[in-house]
Image (cartoon, rainbow, N blue to C red; front, side):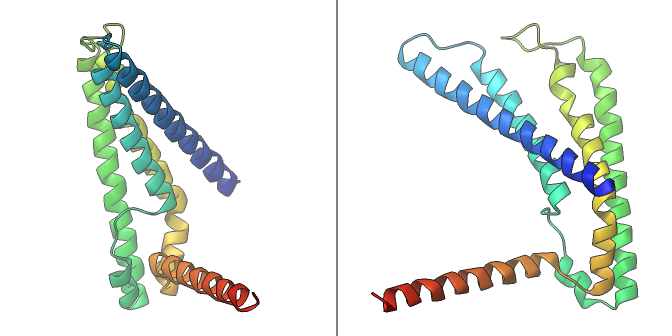
Length: 187
C-alpha cells in the first residue's frame, strides 16, 4: 500500500513537472514570437520566472523521491554497518528537520505575501507564487519518509545505489557495444 502511494505521488510530481515544463516552453515560444512581431507581452518575464521557480522546486522534490540528490553514499558504505545505519538515520533526521523548518517559514511568508501581487498579473497574488515552498517542502518530507526504509536497508547492507546504477549502466553499454560488434562482424 505504501509503495503504491509512493508511486502515485511520484507520478503526480512527474505530471506537475511536465506540465510546468510545457507551460514554460509555450510561454517562451509565444513571447519570442510576439516580440518578433513587435507586440511583446508584458506578463512574460514575471510568469516565466515563477514557472521556472516552481519547476525547480518540483524537480528537486522529484530528485528526493528518486534519491538522486547529493549524498556521501561512498563514505557511508565504507563505514562499519552499525555506524553507517546510525549516520544514515541521523542525516535523514537532519533532512526532515531542514524541510520542516523551510515548510514552516514558507507557510509564514504566505500570510505576508497575500497582500502583494505580480506587477503584470495583478490577479496572481504572491501567496500563490510562494506557496510552492511549503508545498514542496512537505512533499520532500513525505518523500524522505517513504524512501527511508530502503535507505536504511541499503546502509545496513553496505549497498551504494549510485555506484550500483553506474555499474549497471556500464554493463548495459558494454552489452550494447558487444552486440554492435557482433552485428558488424556478420556483415
